[in-house]
Amino acid sequence: MDQFQTLGLAALTGFFFGILLCIPVGPVNLTIMNEGARRGFKWAAMIGTGATLMELIYCGIALTGFAAFFETRWIKAAMEVFSFFFMMFLGFKFTFAKTVSAPIRLGVDADKIEEKLHPHSAFMIGFVRTLANPGVLLGWILLVGIFISHGWVEPTWKSKFACLAGVALGVGLWFFGLSWAISLGHQKITDATMLKMERGSGVLLLAMGVIQGIHIAWVLAKHKT
Image (spheres, rainbow, N blue to C red):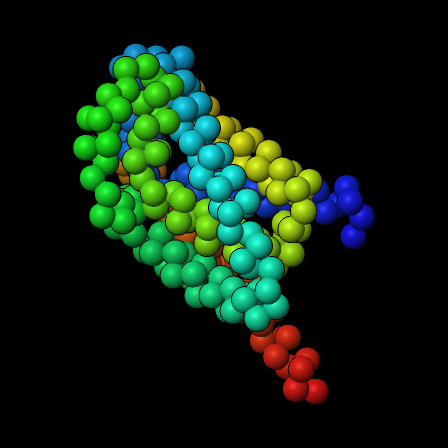
């Protein structure tokens, strides 16, 4: 695989998983849905811009601070097995969800963080509400482990930057599109619609989990022969 293909794969990986991680309804999506209908597209888009920047910071931390940990051969092998169970777990969780999933909070009181930082602008509201959910960082750490173990993102600065650029495009496009749809449709995107999108992301994760399971089985069979 030449450098162009390597960087393209890293960017595509960041783009795809950036969108996938944003689909489950969290505080930022709910804020954009409420504020977009009430205050218009620009306000909602600025909330999404602030959230996108914080997502990139968390993703950057995962790529620079934890990527080296996943380069060890046995950790790569363990992450391949873990990624199968992780994608299947999330796939079943999202596909068969009866209500929109609550975000992971890790015991952090988001309200207290918002009270201390007291954001006023739309940009800072999106930034702080993402900052107050360290579950986003945990999600990126796990995803980076999957990226590195599968070779979708190479342990080089160029590949990591390409992945980060893909994340920026994917996350930004999701929040921008949601802001536009809400402001245009006057809050026609209901919880039921968001639940359908979450279930759709679950189906994609299940499909990826099945592919990963087939790959693991093929590798094991190959080693036995």
